[in-house]
Structure formats: C-alpha cells, structure tokens
Image (tube, rainbow, N blue to C red; front, side, top):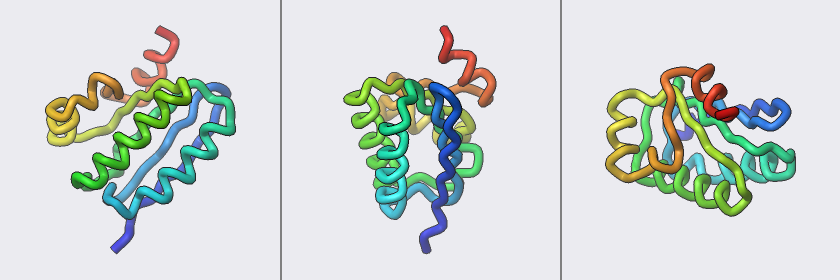
Length: 115
C-alpha cells in the first residue's frame, strides 16, 4: 500500500518537505517530482520534516541519498528534523547525518540556516 505523502512549502530561500507515511521505493517518483519544483524555485535550503514518517526501509534510504546527491549537485543545503531516535541512529550509521544535519525542532533547523 502506498501511503507516502509529501507537501512542499516554499518560503523565500527555504523549501520545507513535510512527509508522512512510509518512505519506501514508492516515494521515489513523488520525491523526484518535488525536487524538480524545488530546483526551479530558486531556493538555497531544503528542510526535511520527518515528524509524520512512520517507516523508512532501505529503498527509502536510497530515495533520500538520491535527493542528497541531486541537492549537492544543485548547490542546495539540506537539514532535517523530526526523526525518531531509532532513525537518527540509522542515519548516523550510514553516514547521512554528516550531510543532512538533524535538529530537535523545525525552529532549530531553520536557525541553523543562517549560521
């Protein structure tokens, strides 16, 4: 069952992706489509909101790695917030936290953009 949803919230130089459901291979097409909109919007930063993401499998991690790679090529910086402690550990183990810093709240993630 495909229950992944993503909402794009564009504000000036920041794109926030509010995700919900299960992040699996079924999210790939939606995330690619959203990235095209982000790229054409002229933003500099992408903030990933994981508060409503219930499950991330290896294919979902691959979707995030693709997003990271495309963002780096486009000169966009990524931030994240809302990951459960379980997924924070997994992101750390696979090295994603080096490239997608995770914050405790949306506010702290946004504050890091000006730093």
